[in-house]
Image 1 (cartoon, each protein chain N blue to C red):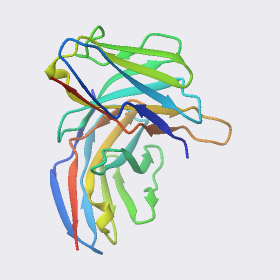
Image 2 (image 1 turned 90 degrees about the vertical axis):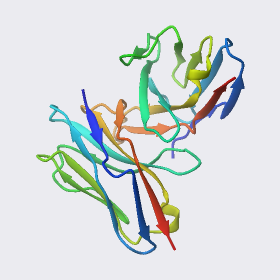
Image 3 (image 1 turned 120 degrees about the horizontal axis):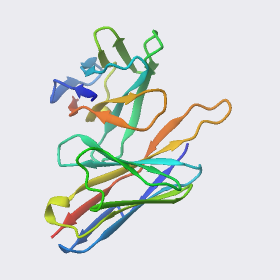
Length: 115
Length: 119
């Protein structure tokens, strides 16, 4: 079974500052995907960033970047220049294998960005 | 970008009735869709994988007879909560996999979810 652990139930950051959300996972697989999803109050799941396990280079998407440590099974999300619109629940998710679809989510981290 | 439509967005029903939720891929074919359940302030839990033209694959602990899944076309999967009870009240979300095409990576797209409240 795959488990995804997000140890920070809540985080807060001031606007324009940087915040890092933690995620660890447990798997015996060598090939997989990792994701960070954002869920605002509308509850729509929004993809923030995705990382293929075979890629050594950390994924980046504008202000969002990850620190993927495969040996340590760690996948943290860094949000730079935080904006008020970043306030949301953030979920780390694991996808086993190279075929997308069956995602296993962590418990989530509620991020609040303060003005 | 690709869109997945989920209906209804909210439904209230009486205990013992059945409720059908639709998940539709609007501009791509999705041979595989996925159904999740989310309790308040909790994570998404994968319930089942919906396969076009074949039986759904359920995750351990999910009752097949309670949660009926039908994937009769390349763009539509339905989840029917049969004989609903208050404990079935939850937020249900679907996702669809956009199949890989030449030069295009596979992607997942989520519906907007359905809040089910069983009285």
